[in-house]
Amino acid sequence: MSGHLITVSTKREVTSYKISGRSSSNVDVATFVPFSAEVESVANTTSTSSAHDSALYNPINIDFARDIEPGPGLQALTVDRKLMISCGYWDNSFKVLSVDGKQLLQSVNQHRGTVTCLAVGLDGTTLVTGSRDTTLMVWTLSGNTDRGNKAPPVLVPPRLTLFGHDDEVSAVAVNCELDVVVSGGNDGSVLPHVHDQRAYVHQQ
Image 1 (tube, rainbow, N blue to C red):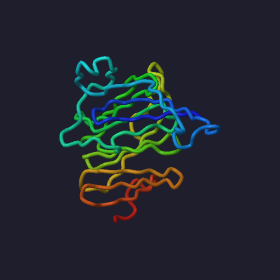
Image 2 (spheres, helix red, strand yellow):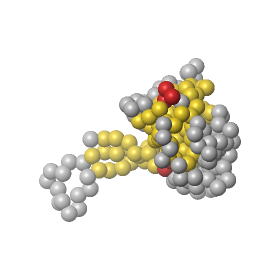
Image 3 (cartoon, helix red, strand yellow):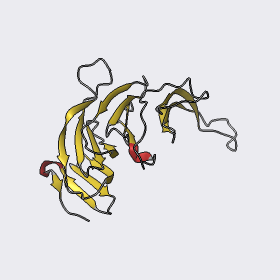
Image 4 (tube, rainbow, N blue to C red):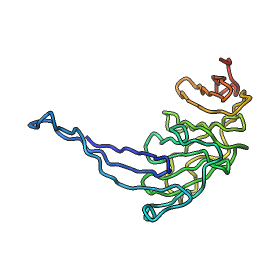
């Protein structure tokens, strides 16, 4: 058994680990470790670097917006684990980073405020972003991971824009099977949206 684990530190250091399973036969159960983790690559996405991390790759080189706290809602991996999409930057963009190649593939600026949250659908082609401009945008992922490809990883413009919030969108989730996006706002509102209606169904 093998796989990959991607971690993002509060310093925006992206680390890729190769996970390998181990057989449990003929071993001491008390000291048995079921898997091993080997660092494959490290990417430093901060705008400054010290002597300690000067050898790390720096693909994004831009600061977070004011008052943005690093957290799990600011980044997501695509279903195939080849791309990491991150947000929270002062230029109102979200960034698409190649996990394997450690390259910045795309920077998308369509929101009028800081992008505060995002979610990737399990269908592998849907991305939803929420912003301080109170809107959500639904995007199509092309599946391309080659920087030289004519079609970017995220197709622009967005597939549609969803409205309904009166305050900053702070959280979002998407269920592609049900064609539903659920978003939360800083004012405590929770809005379920249906794609084809382009509006929230009922405010909680």
